Length: 248
Image (cartoon, rainbow, N blue to C red; front, top):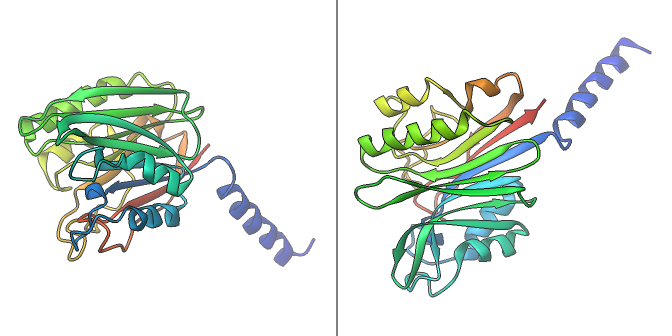
């Protein structure tokens, strides 16, 4: 075997391994109820952003369930149907004839689902946890109040530390990378999404408040392959973020 062919074989093997079943594509997206910066409710537009990501699991924030604001549509289920995925919803508050909260979309059906209430003095918050055969994926949208965020972090830490497989969390954490809250989070977590690229507001981003993270203890079980903020400036007031990891 020539040296050139051998190098080509190694490169090809790396590419094939990175696209195999042990590759996990994660997205987080605050969808603003599928109401874009043009203030138009356009579920198909949001679904197109989701489909183009080819993500395996997606954390969605600001999701309506049959509210008058969203014309009685169950946003999570509709997005799942349009994206050929499964949908799982967690209520934060009752709102305008329906419910408001967050959701996880996934290509595969989880083996377990858990919903945990979190504090929020301006509005109640929630944590949605889905467990799959090789990993656990959680979604949240934290309070605007720092004390509530720190209390929520302690609750999340207490749950995640007992996980027997890689644990990922994604969502709108409502704080910037230089904040005391994020510094506290970094005691136990590694942030996988870009912290040097802005996610909000979508048209002229000036802040990073959306994150994908994993526990320090997962370091030996995963390898970060790529990460980015998606250049999408119209479908929501947040830009989506994506991370691809390899489960070893």
